[in-house]
Length: 237
Image (cartoon, rainbow, N blue to C red; front, side, top):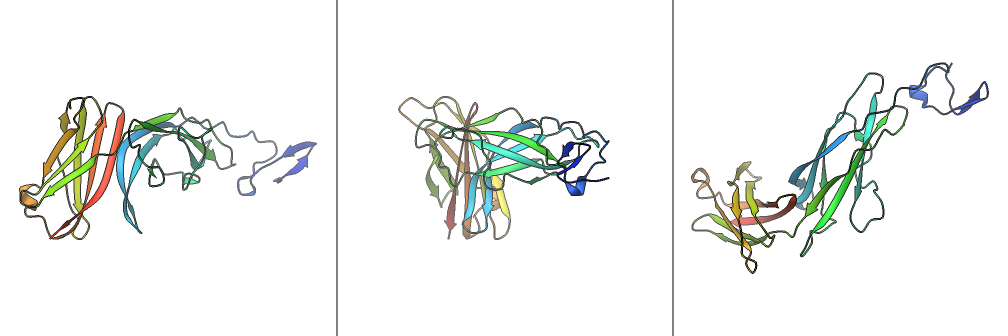
């Protein structure tokens, strides 16, 4: 017997018609708590206006036959928010998905100091029940690097960052027209108090001279648990 929002022996049942249990069957056990991790900053392609900076999240989740997962829901909170809430694309994440890119186009990086963004994740079963929510995964955001120059003779990019302390930085450059791409080596800097950290990376010999057209660059900077990313373009003649 299968009942939706009806009484059986004086007991109110509220079940999904497509996943309706017999009246005398116990409900499946509660869903496990996902483990949510920050997977680094990433460049995400926007079909309208190029690439956006994004926070890349991934998670692990214990699955059982007794508790089939219907979807995941990701919650987000900025310091100015009063509570965690869903946002564009964060609801009804397919059950077989284990990662998510949160584009930060609508949330600018801080001009100075630091900002943060926090996330939590929960699974939803085929009865529409929400499982335990993951522990908070927080990401500290720093001011974006400043792109200084592209030297057309040497094929080198230069950029600066005002993040204090020991800084690590690298860049990725790519060209959509022919799928060419390279990533520079990891660099470190320990700038003085009144000076920015300075970095430079040159196109490898295999790409010299760079093919004419539009190239994209992504400048990654991190210091301990603090992260920054700046995406821009190079028009090579």
